[in-house]
Length: 169
Image 1 (cartoon, rainbow, N blue to C red):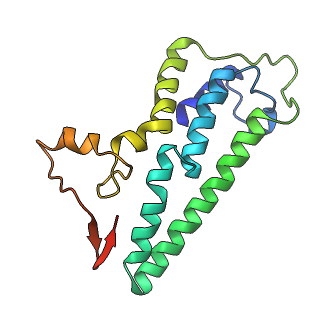
Image 2: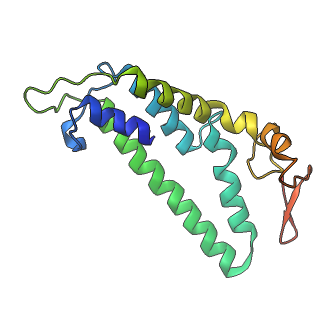
């Protein structure tokens, strides 16, 4: 997301006012695709990485029980909702709607030295949660490739995790 935002600023000649963006999806297709992948991941849409973690974080917060669990769960839900709102606003204002560029502005795609790392991170946001995590691990998802790779140096137990007596699958 941050590299994509930087790419937009670069393509807009260091313009940082989103009110001066709009309709950039055709002028910056790589940036649009990468930021879209990050946006979908942060919203928690399957199969993007955020889907495998966001609900688990909220679930664990609520499972703490009592006032503490309720407060942390509500804060987690509010944080997720606010993030979804402002990221949707950023995405739609930047890439859709009418051109609101200042006169003489010529938006352009970033050079490959910026696009390649951005695309690699977008790929990670798309499939990273699925490939690396396991519902019983630190990084939730249907596999546990990362945990197995790290197992020589970090403890890893397969199976369900327990938080305050509640099974977190």
